[in-house]
Length: 560
Ligand SMILES: [Cu+2]
Image 1: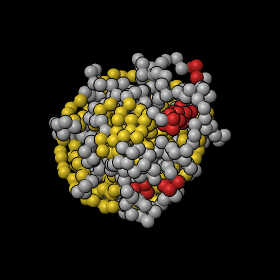
Image 2: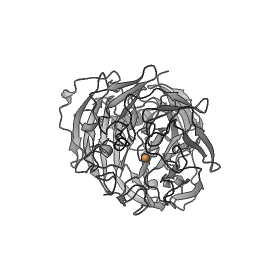
Image 3: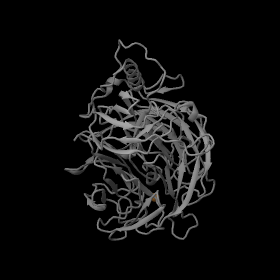
Image 4: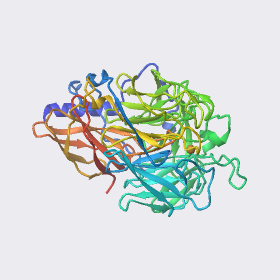
């Protein structure tokens, strides 16, 4: 390792460990750190701590994919499509070959409120190379996967739970390209959310939608926590009470415990960042426990908004409305830093979005920028009034939004977006309301500014020639790229999205341990903490000095 690279490596570690500078507008969690009574098994001291004796690193030549000025000032972007799909994609997930698995409900263009006997689900696999979709009908898992919870498992399988078939679990197996029946949840749920945990298990919470009108179904409320593990199935966590973490929706519990923003933090606990204005820490050990964090600044309850983990322990929240339906959305954005752990959370209100949005979708790019699409200024389900057509991109350095090109089709309730393997964004769906006028059985593809020159031409992309397909947390991996200059690298977790929720995606910038630019050989350090690098499939991107990303290589990271 050369001196320069040692300096750069230390620079990265310092940035990672300190999580940026303190800002006077921050609001800090006032709970003493010592009040954390339980250390989860996953909780370990990050190995990447700054050495106290380290001299100040040279700030030149960033090795993180920090957005270069050339990209910050770019405003070129492009929408392509719409491309017809056989159904309204109200949920979608990444497949390792770059295609997108999408699904609707027991029908392609409408839903049923509650189960209709033996459940089934229409699916479509969209190919971004041909813009065509292959159709499927899943009936073997007896599951109408409408309004479900979604999560990607450690081996890349896609888990879908609840929704119209309220206890069912279905798992899409990548090897057989088929759906497999999983164990039933203990608590029936719809509009719940899920998040992967550091040990590869899956946590779910909330989901009262669907339980207020049918006398044969449970009452809304008490949709308490559950954890799935491969070897034991679902286990109730009775002390993680959804009602405690709910909004004050005018429709009551039926809406109040829906679509929670939950992220496994570097300390191994789950952080509840919204939509409720009061945030929480959740410990899933034993029967579980919940402790209050701080409020999300002056933000109101923000149902139908969303949140993105754009860096290690850092969450950006975007829009939302106090009530689920018939409610004014905000332009609000907040940076929540949970990297320092319990008792040390900070919230910073950053510059507003250009548009008020509810039912919007957001993804983090390998550059750390966040792209927001769709949504409406006044949330009303199954409508396209007050739609925001322009995308916006948020820059993590300036913490500001730039308005970008306009989509052709409004994307509101029941729409999705996903970062694709090629660095572009899949945006689809909206509607699923039968004979209504707001069904959008189509997809559009968004090209962010980082893939275009200032003239709007395709930028020259770096190329990953080789990378391992599996790795363990803590490994140093060898990657071969083109020799066009000093590259930076980032992982983004492959993910699933529905109803503005994507708790799977997270971006992890990778430190460069050694590099030989002349031969394009790099060794990259994967953080030694599965609460940071959640077990799962990741897109590994290389970015060149202009911030242009490669096409990703897929790498499965877990304890093999
Ligand atoms: Cu729904």
